Image (tube, rainbow, N blue to C red):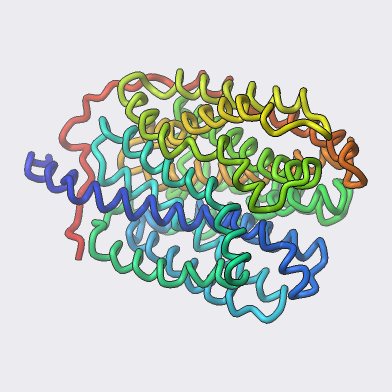
Length: 478
């Protein structure tokens, strides 16, 4: 049994602060690279003579690498050390950023972006785990609120930073800036974050391979479906092969004595509800971001930097609201906050969808954008809190990996749904034709959001009475 001194060491204020700051900043850096590149696409087209498909893969390769390796990184972190894998993921992300910056061809850039995604996925999965290790259960909602605010700020600043860098410097500096920042975060993490591990089973190599293949197959099929057609051999092969691999993975996890993903997790209603919310929230955020940014530019005629400014009412509120939402989750529980937050987001963009016209003024959008912004600022950190608070301390690493994998697959799914609905109802021929596709795409994404609110009903309110023995066994931070 841990002593009170052991509890104080495990949950010391200094350790909590440094872990939260470093893990949140790493999440900010990784999250920023999801959206910051979108403003560079026209420049890449000119400088590298890249076609539409190649430009799309500069985004998709990052998402695929991110989705495929989250679960693997979390499982390895539980065995070899969460800090070790967190730092390793950041190191791969930083080195890959360097390769992106010096890439002479679009093909090398795409490959480097895929490696960036792999490193980012590992780092993000372990970021939640190290925050959970360093924070007492009754304070984790507030901690995830801070993490959510900083991570959400990456979404808000991505288009703005990308536009400013391209205007003042060059597209390569989007990646160059990651290098010195990544090195500093790695060094501080080695010094300030304590090492922790989960249950040390033998490595489930077959599980690692099957899960990675399954996530990769389905994710790449969803990304390519809108461009190649859902009947394309690559898309159908990816969907069928991915499903087969995941079914085989589940069969193996049920059979093996040392599974990388304990299926008992999914007997936990709160964990399942949190994962459903994470999937729908990511699908909505990325899907809406994909069509709404284009709507502001192509239908309303704003330049890329102006688009970023006009998206701020939707994405910038997280910095102010997410910490408050985290503290409310500690006292009220996650379920009511998630239901209200998701419904606010759905109502906001449903209103925009219904009043969308080619000559609409931006001023009419501000109120629904603010409503949606409040909703996502409440829901984003609260979903993470619901998942991580629902499991035992020794399972936080794998729980983070599973929930983050589900969230990233949700992001890919949201973009695919938005693209598929848009292309079937509208097009790029004129502003009116764009709106013809934009409106049903937003409505489809609203339906997904409402489904997430229904999933939040599975989450139970937890009581905080942790026995001393549940404290993580902290090791000195080198």
